[in-house]
Image (cartoon, rainbow, N blue to C red; front, side, top):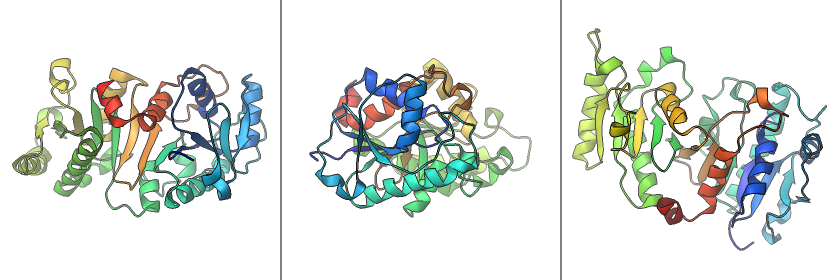
Length: 328
């Protein structure tokens, strides 16, 4: 194997993943080998249902280093799963299958065979069962990573929520100087490592217009002092900014990354601006983990109308040299 392959955990079996994966391979040629981790029996069922044709190349994990791979076939490590039919409703039955898929991926990473992981859409409710806030935290826990961040990346503008899949009532207690500080460092280190520059970072306030009628104002007492301290440490950071105007064209173009206080504060506008042209990158891991910026999309399963753009962007991100991406 000449270069480290891209490993893809197919994720939720009852999702649009295999459909968008086929569309991705059909429309694009990638330099690096791609190895899928998933069920061959399910793949064949869904291929038949969607009238898709491509040769399947089953890979044995114990002999992975010796394979000469190309992407003309679907290179796949089989994970046992007994589908009743090609497309079913998402249920708890998927949990063991997804866990076993991740175990294989983690072994490949720990064995040094790859440092590039893509995860397909996963239902957090059925898989994580409230043990973790999201897949970001699940993977970070498996690699004992103390600090992590979810970066929704687009080369024009990226966003990072300070808190991820957390109920709004619990957000305030997670807005700390330590949390803001750690997310900033992770973002700055990522851009310096892969794009060779320090990003311009905007930090949003929590309250409307960064004001509060309460005695304690998080924007004044927590966010602003932390941003001021980071500025003194030569980070290109400023804020807090009001969330209702930061995404206006003349404002957002001044920044590379916007840090929001909670999930929907930044993910709603970024998806409105770029739709499927964005990917989810987990920062803080000893390898690169990327995923399409959407879920299993249960309502569109089996209809062959799903948009593959986010998966295309995820694979392209890992397939191209970073400088190529920067210039693109």
